Length: 311
Image (tube, rainbow, N blue to C red; front, top):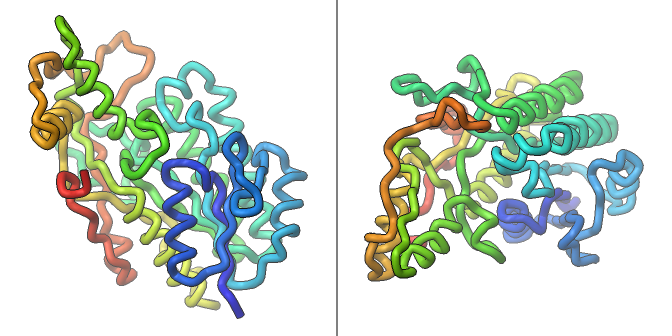
């Protein structure tokens, strides 16, 4: 019997790579999207519509074992600043749509992975790395809605153990537009800094661990395979997993790296070492490095691509 997968948000930065990872592994994988859907490869589905979710789960005639991947389909609910500007929209996608999807998959005996974030922790100096069971205290609305999405997923799937959370940090990788990733977009920042008189401030305070979307796709597949092979022992497996690169940079250091690769001067960019502005609407953590111990204990490969070499 063929293994099948439904990947939501499959037209996005991460979703495309997750879809490809399952396809490369021989699964019958189908994606969903909304504004950039391209049927029949990527079906158009509004995951805020419970009836549409029920319909697509039945329409694609999925067979066991099955894996469903959750990714917010709108950039407005993926970036902290935009979540702060539209908290109701962020909650609708990151929490309520997730709850609906987890309920529908669990009712059908379908395994689901919910993609979460490292923005669940205070990120205070000296606290990282964080384990899956470390106390959470999101610093902003984005982090809070993702934490509530985790809780919704695990609550809806607890009876049969058919749900798991995968936390990941800031991502980079192949993208249709640079602004799809807060890392990729730094290439545009570097180009803009070449304009005469440019003085662009770039954060040189917060510690980031950019992780490639291809690696995350691979890990999603490996988690699905591991958990679906567990059978009746799935209840004993951890429900919160974390994946991250070990390479650490500030955004300014990434700009330095890009400038070196491209042979461009960096005079138009100024390192901002001030940290959070206490009056800013969105507060960001200093260091939310995620421990990958739970994945290692499961025997899942947590190696990542070399950041500089990828570019």
